[in-house]
Every structure is written in C-alpha cells, then in structure tokens.
Image (cartoon, rainbow, N blue to C red; front, top):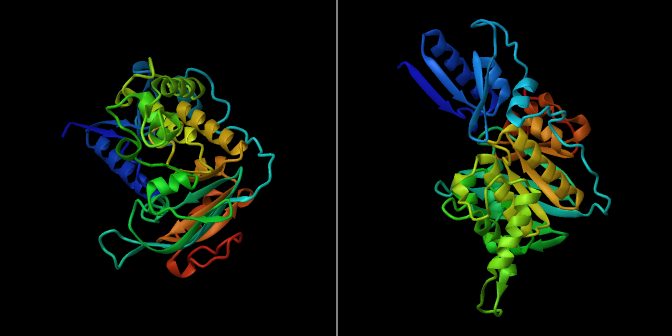
Length: 373
C-alpha cells in the first residue's frame, strides 16, 4: 500500500480509540505510506499532518506547513487553520450565552426510562434513566460509545429504537405519550439525529421540501381531511430559513444531497425549528461540520434557548458540552452516572464519570461522583 485516504476516521470514536488510530497513522507514515486525512478535528490534524490543505466552498484555499520537519512539534496554530477555513479570525469558539428571562419551569422530565436491545431482548441498553431540562436551559449528555446516549434519545422520541420496558416522559409538567414519532412531535418534542443523511434528510429532494417535512399540517390548504400543501407558503418559509441560518444554496429548490455537511445540518435544524417544539433533542449536532458552520449552529442553539426552548445536547466532543451547556449528565453502560453543573464541569470530571463502573452509577444528581479506583 502506497497511499491511504481516511475520511473523518475518528468521527464516531472516543478520545482513547482516536489516539490509537492516529498512532497507527503515524506508524504507517514512518513506513513510507502516504496518508491523506480528511478531518474537522483540528487538534488531530496538528498531531499527525506535515501539511494541511484548506478547502472552502469547494475550492482549495491554501496549503500550509504544520511542522518544519517530520516528527517536529507543530508550528501551525489552530487559530491560523480556522482563519483559512472561515476566511476571517474567529475570536470565540462558542457564543456568549444569552440568558432566558422567563420562568424556568421544567420543560422535559424523563423518569425511570428503561429500554432493551431491539434484537437481544435480554440486554438492557438504557437502564432506569432519569433526567430533566428546564425552559431556556441547554443540558448536555456525555458518554463514550456504547453508553446509551443515542439509544436514550431515539427511544424517547417515538420509541424509534429498542424495546420499551418502562418509564415516563413529561413535557411542561404533563405526562405525554411518545409511543410514535407523530405522537412525540405532537407532545412538543423534536429530535435532530446524529446521522442526518440516513435519518434526518431526504437527500434526493429539495431544500424547501425537507424543511417542511415535520410541519406539513401547518402548510395545508383546502380542508381538514384533505387539501394540499401551499407551495407559496412552503417556499416562503424555506427562504426565511435559508437567510436566517445562512444556508449556502443557490435556491431553495436545490437538492439537499448537493449541499455541504454543515448546510445539510442547518436544513435539519430548520425543519425542526419550524415545527416549533418545546424541547429539542440534538444528537451530535456539529459532527462532520467545519468550524465556521459549527459556530453558526451553536449560535442558533443559543438563540433557541434564549427564546425559552429546552435543549438536550448529546455530544462526544467534551469542549462542545463545556462551552454550551448549563448542566451535563454523564452516562456509562446505559445508566446516568452523574450530573455536573457548569461551574464544576471540566474534561477530567466528565471523563471520570463517563468511565465509571456500573457499581458506581447510583450517584445522586448534583454531586460529584468519585472516580473508579
């Protein structure tokens, strides 16, 4: 093998597994193999690359030296790479939080949620999970691969994953049914999936039709039992989101499959924002998204919280959780292992709880768990 091309090789890996894979890449380089790594994780680029070529809007912008000699320490900063990616200096990675001025009632409360594997019914993947999110609050969920974060989100949202065993969901203090996706939407929930291409979008359809998918009833004309979609209204709504979320597409009639990953993610967000939910569950909302689009998405999320929406943010990127969230729940082996307020949250505290053994999973919310011995 003389050339290896890796496209986002660590997107679904935890930090430990990512480090092992990058060590393998360095080993291949030492053996004379040429390696091209495509990644949005700038710290990984600086660790393994000798040069970096920056692409923006489908064009090569510049090529920069990461280190002066093979094996030397990086001389190229992340800020310099970011400047090339977004075309300007990015002073902050995360927006300043705009506080919600209304009453902080509990918007989402999940109690005793237990789900088994869809095939192996003897295996519990979400085990007696309880959590809550207040209006105007961004609450994070941290965990390693296999911790049960996505399984929790999908099972709460219309029981889209696994075999439900027990548990309740309340929205605005009222217990609701989320037995189906339509019931979950009617109850005020929205779910931005971690796999936008498979579950979040119709890639062969247009931007404007994707945005209207979750709220077609509000665009209908011609009667309660029949009627048709008001094409003018549908187009007008899509134009509004194209402008407000800075979706880079020539028109709202562009096929979504032709957009970049960041713009596709903005379409998914537009779809759910227009559905006007009380609670947004965001599962890896910036995965595979460049740093400029990532900041724009974070700004949208902050604006939603400032309007009183409750946001449950699932992410494998600890800096994202630390930069965006008011509180963070940690999960391991399908259970909640702790709850950390923003003021006490660090990567070390979160990792300690994310790697907690099952016997330590009964930590009281609001207290710092002891790390595994």
